[in-house]
Image 1 (spheres, one colour):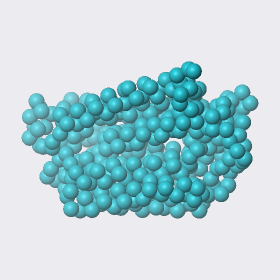
Image 2 (tube, helix red, strand yellow):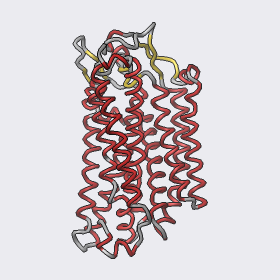
Image 3 (cartoon, helix red, strand yellow):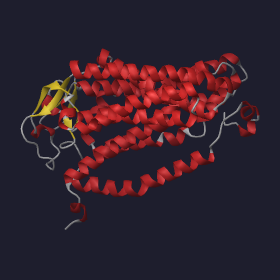
Image 4 (cartoon, helix red, strand yellow):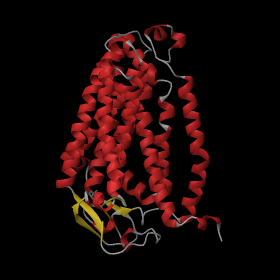
Amino acid sequence: MILHEFVDFEILRVIWWGLLGVLLIGFALTDGFDLGVGTLLPFVARTDIERRVAINTVGPVWEGNQVWFILGGGAIFAAWPPLYAVSFSGFYIAMFLILAALILRPVGFKYRSKREDERWRAAWDWALFVGGFVPALVFGVAVGNVLQGVPFRLTEDLMSIYEGSFFGLLNPYALLAGLVSVSMLVMHGAAWLQLKTEGMVADRARTFGAWAAIATIVTYALAGLWLAGGIDAYSFVGPVATDGPSNPLMNAVVKGGSWMAAYEARPWIVIAPALGFLGAALAFLGFRTDKEGWTMLASKLSILGIIASVGLTMFPFILPSSIDPNSSLTVWDSSSSHLTLFVMLVSAVIFVPLILAYTAWVYKVLWGKVTASDVVDKSDSVY
């Protein structure tokens, strides 16, 4: 027997669906606070010293945090090729905006201190704001569109045809999902600043963080209610082969009903949205009581719950089609081959723990607060 056949194809598909979620959550938990700090930068830091303090809290770690983003994109490409083809082509302009905004971040970090000019530095500070706000918003907008279904169809030879437009992505529900994302990551960034700074920067971060926690709860609740009562779900017609070939057109899918049916079929998944609300509520209390470590942990808990609730609610659908439900991509019919998933799993078992160990070591080495004296002494300042 070939080695990969020891693990069922169905199980490998579920494992890689879960690992994709882990990578996306890992990105939000790490680079998410970088995006939040960038979004908050013009508001929590009023002087050049304060802004350098805020920047230096993320300066040493942001590049390592983006590893999760790269891993997520690589996992989609290798484990779910149809998903990569449809999403990266259909969301091309949105992806371009994200990449352009992310490119502004390293440029802003490197160039803002090249000149002793207030307007020069203010311009780059706003560039860092764009580099934090735009990806946070667009990621949420993308999730909102995925929940509604994306306007694509597959031809008989499985070539994807996208029939939407960029402005079509900016529909009301998707924008609400974008606000959930922005609120969530601003809360996370404020928790990081509270943990890593002191004085006025930390005080302002606590204020903005408390409001962001409230906004997260409100927008997440509104998005959930809208999803329950105003967004059609997708479901299979008849039995589906969970270990069959990766051809979405072999299964019949209909659009209708509510996504909340998932909670009737699998009641245990209610733990995800519960964690989303509970984490944000605990983060609010942490900001109000200045419990730095607990606030950061609660913020992470909220992000975990919110992102997990999307995947668990949609399972087994990954990317539904709003114009041709039968073209919808699911866990059971849009993966790579059995052998490919097994080889990737072996690689993940080896390398992901190494990445986690290295990340933990870096954070341990860089532990502690960044103060004004640190940035005044340029030997201790990154930017």
